[in-house]
Image (cartoon, rainbow, N blue to C red; front, side, top):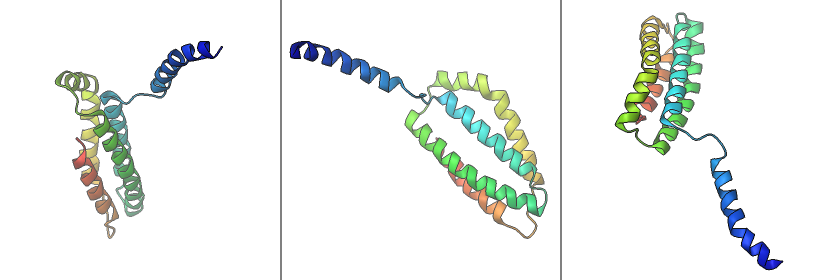
Length: 136
């Protein structure tokens, strides 16, 4: 009996290790880029609403929340490592149009965003810029 248990222990352990290691979603460059674009779209939404003082105040709070999420993306990106040239090309083909659209929205919204007498939005955006520049 003990011998049979010992003989089963190794295959069961290996099987369990394989099952547990495959649990949960694996991070990929594509998932990280998709999540980044989603955050940028949220940022664009916030900036588009920041045309008046109250909107700017709300946008600054939203931007600070997004800073934390961008920091998480930076950590995830570090863990996955730099993409290969083939991966970069595939990501560009898959997400290029979405990226172009969101960057155009951000540029237009940034020009319209106003902070009369309230520098919180500018400070929040500067903090976001620091995190953004640390992304690989």
